[in-house]
Every structure is written in structure tokens, then in C-alpha cells.
Length: 369
Ligand code: SAH
Image 1 (cartoon, rainbow, N blue to C red):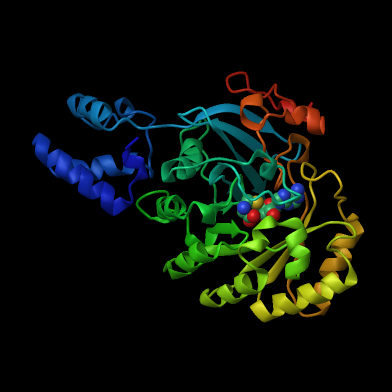
Image 2: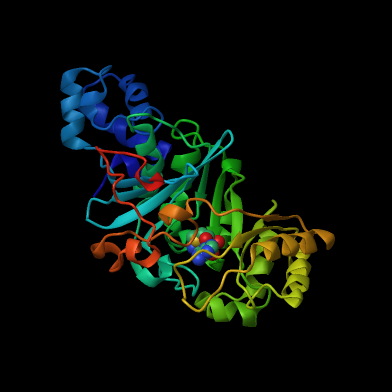
């Protein structure tokens, strides 16, 4: 499908300028049309009431606006919201909105499913269904602006389903759609790309002039230990990923899920501190959430604190994160849709904590019950 929503501002401007000229419409219409794509979006052109009816009809015929259909929305006790979106071809993805003080962070998906098969991650068990188009990635924000109570996220993180750097062309365009002041206008420093470190795309991301933030999913401090958790280590090895970080003139974050007896030992701490210092990285320590390999056990909460303290003692900035949205399986790595046609598995059966009552239309804070 060709849609205006897949175009960067320059390309959309060029396309619409030509189209308006061919129709004999005045060029100033462009400045009325463009904001309707992203900045002040409309669900359909008929809703752009500042435009003449004839023009709206022509736009609808020539450039219909695609949308994500909100299939379920669940609200966690802690205020975290999980949205399941149906894509036009029937695939499904999830996004998670995490309110925290004045911040509203939206965690978005870049692929339906994921090909990486990290042992600890629920999404990995799905395999890859397909890459998302640029508009499908950015529309996870657009749809929030079109909601009954519109609310723009302050921050966006690519930590939903999928590996963003295995879908680079679409993710690269989506970054522009999210960031450009004439489009969604979310500051580059408020957009984080999280990746295992796909080297060719990492080099492309480093070349972007905007200061997008980068998070590397590390999870083990040595190549051998990482290989046991993340099959991608065979293809893009940790030492090479660390070296590639040299091309980023900004602070990166290491994501590190603490797994009892696997990567939370004292020697892991020492080695992690060493590479984090060398890379000038800060470390986010995450509790392991359920959903991945059954044999993996979360490190004790106390270990999260002592591990973070140990890193700090060694001169590394480290934060132990809390889980959010656990009761609705909305936490990192837990994203998998509840429908058989998506995951082949029903999350409610896996975790016993999903309440599907919070449906669109009859929305309640069902998961709070
Ligand atoms: N593919 C990208 C982005 C999606 S995963 C990446 O790997 O970075 C987003 C984050 O959630 C990653 O840091 C990932 O390693 C982490 N994650 C995956 N499974 C998890 C689990 N079971 N518990 C906690 N974090 C997990």
C-alpha cells in the first residue's frame, strides 16, 4: 500500500505539491494538508473541516489514511497501559504506555514478532511474522493523538516487539516521522532505539545527525556467556558491537536483565563494569520477567540492588529498574498477543494475569480487578 504516512516531510511535500498543482488547487493548501498527517492528525480526510468538501473527497479517494485498529487495551494497577493493535493485513503488535511522574513513555514495536529468539524473551518464541512499515511504527503514536482522550507521549522507546535494526529502512523513516518538528515533534533525546547490535544498521544509525538515544541489550559481559542467551551473538559478536559504539558521539545505555546464577555473579559484575567503563555507558538493570525459557530464574530483588551498587562502586552509573505492568504482561520481553492467531498461545494461560475485559468500547480498568 502506498500511503502519504510512509513519506518523510520532504517527500510528502513534494508528492502533495504535484498533486495539488495537477488538480489546479492553490499551493497554500499544502500548509493545511501537511499538519493533518501527523502534527494534528485526522482519522479520515472528511474530518479535516478546514478544507473544502471537494478537496476532502478527492484526498479520500487518492490518499486514504491507513490506521491501526485498537483491538484491546489493558490498564495495569500501576497505570501502565498495553495496547494490542491490529494491522491492515491482520497481523498484530503491541505498544505499552508507561506513565511516570510528568513523563509518558511509549514503548513501540518495530516488527510483528521477532526473529532473534533470545532465550529469556517472550516475543522471541513467536518468530518473525513481518517487518512493520514506517507508518505502522509511527502510527502507534499517531493513534494516541486520535484517541477519545488524546495524549501525546513525551518519550518513545523501541523496546516493544521486534528488533528495530533488522528493519532499518522503515525504522529510519519512522525516526524522522516521530522527531520532525512538522510531524510528531518528539525530541531526538526523547527517542531511544534499543537493539542487540545489528552492525550494518548500527553504523547507519550512528550517521544520523539527530541525537537519538541508543540502548544496547547486553545481558552478558562476555561473548561466550552472551551466546548462551542470545543466538545473534553468532552473527554480531559482542567485541564488535562494543567497538561500533565508538561511532556514537553520545552516551549509550546497556540493558542487562539479571538472571539468577547465569549473569548475576560477582565475576559478571566485574567484567560488566570493565566494559561499561570502557564504553562510557550507563547500565540499566532489569528484573527478569516471565515468558521466556522456563529454566531461567529472576535474580533476587536484593541482588538487583547490590549489583547496581557494585557497579557504582566501580565508577559505572547504574540503575535498578522496577517492573511495570507485570499484572497485564506488559513488561519488557513479555509482549505477546493474547490471540491464538498471533502468538499461538494465550498469555492468560501462561501468566494467569491477563484480564481481557478491558476492551475497546466497554473499556474498564479491567486488569485492576
Ligand atoms: N530487540 C530489541 C528491542 C526489544 S526488547 C532489543 O533487544 O533491544 C526490549 C528490551 O527488553 C531488551 O533490552 C530486551 O532484552 C528486554 N527483555 C526481553 N525479554 C525480557 C525479559 N523476559 N525480562 C526483562 N527484559 C527483557
